[in-house]
Image 1: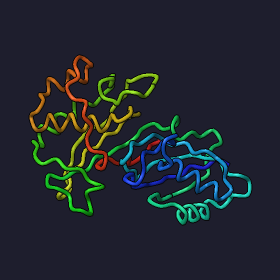
Image 2: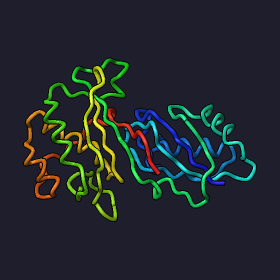
Image 3: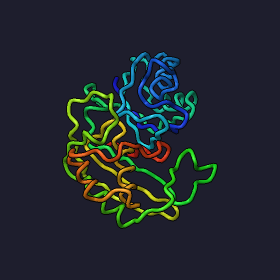
Image 4: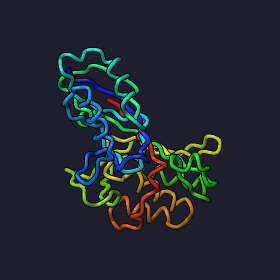
Length: 240
């Protein structure tokens, strides 16, 4: 039986979502070890990979259960008992053909930061940008919307079939002391969201112009390659 699970995790305790040869501190490794302890010998497939330090409130994974595992509620309880810094929010039976990554239609990320330095209790979960123009930030984010070749907006070293992505929404909101940037797209390249945030923030504090931003989006010239800090980024939701 194939199941779909919605999970959340604190990325600060892991070196990313994807399994790696140089470390066992990944979300995939932790979940697969917990599954194996319950006699479930199945790899997991995630809707997307998150970098080291990046969090999730709505990551989706799929995996297969042996015949003797029919109670998904009990499975959820057992996994949450075994896992640390990862929470299984829901498990449900799905089609045997379901693929958490390839069947995802949209992914939503949010980036959370403050204008003043976060407290010691927030510093691993919220980023920090001391000064910026909110109107310029909102304007900059709109340039990302639409279909673009984001070849100048991803970390090198990852092989992809195409660097073209469609961003349906890119906007900025304020909730009390918290500033939040939202991106909704059909998919993202490696570290693309963090680079877009950094470029938008550089534009918002006048380090680069909107013309330069447009030139980087149009793949004419790369002005910024730095990434926004990982701790402010959350994979919020995956839409199927």
